[in-house]
Image (cartoon, rainbow, N blue to C red):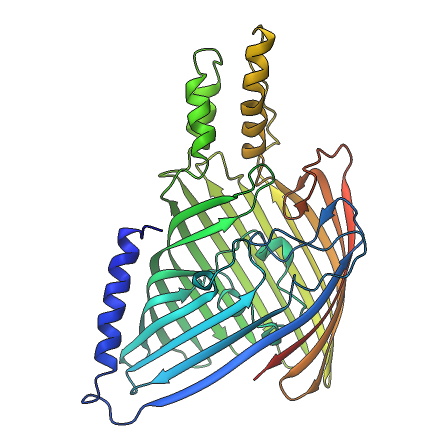
Length: 421
């Protein structure tokens, strides 16, 4: 696979930085720390037609009341090396269910951190995407209360890592801290689709800035992120549309809208959390806007409230994702001879699939319990009810690529054990 020029430059810079860190004349005492995390889980969903999945990077899911273990089960290992107070490196590898799985996708972190002065950190390499409140530890099940991060919020926004740089400045306040971070980089991701067995490969550059405030028992943040897309993810479809524009007047407009190269997505995220070691609550809200027809402008939200009773925590959760645009119906040209109409029909269907491929409209209500039964070990049980618009089921796996005529629903039951080691 040909490297994006930005990624090639970043990889070269990282190798140079690592060679400096590993110089034996510069550091006499090097500290190593190995750690890991794992989740073993099963999930069942009672909907027969669509499969429940953790996020859009998975192409299989639970359905028809069958137990499915791959959705949430994973194992991760982490190697942290401290060369001095100013330099350290971290490598993290996570094995889990993914579409087109390989080691390159499993390598979540591989970065060097430089701290020129206390309170200022510069990281270079493969970094966790710190766009939302759980972004950097969304795969460490032990680190959060639920079985998994809220589906309506984190399933679609499946940006786990990027190759690049971030700079974080910490300001110590009288009763808390303020962190301001800026980041930029490049990443690729493969996503399955209902209409293409090979899925889509997206090459994009994320950039943004976040503000995180911790004040007593409160946590708050705001993030702005812009993601520019470097490739046309559905080039065969747009090429086909351009070729038939002489007989289909709308074909060029559709192709221009679907062509993702040079298009951008923008996120505005606000999060707020509270935890006094007895009661805890957390909420996040994001608006996504895009100038690409392949991505529907949408809003994402969840709220959760819980209470601890010693090692046991009870919680409730609610979430929703809503489109800010109407569902798009595509009609082909009229008056063509039957043979021509038959040849163009796949382009009509592919265009409608693409324009609505990210059309999401669902809500969820759930209850759960967490039991910390031993040191660094927790059992979790969660029951959720999902209600989906008939056109808004794209967070789920539509195995037969059905066009639903009625709204869909599902009760999802999950059981996991999370450990740190």
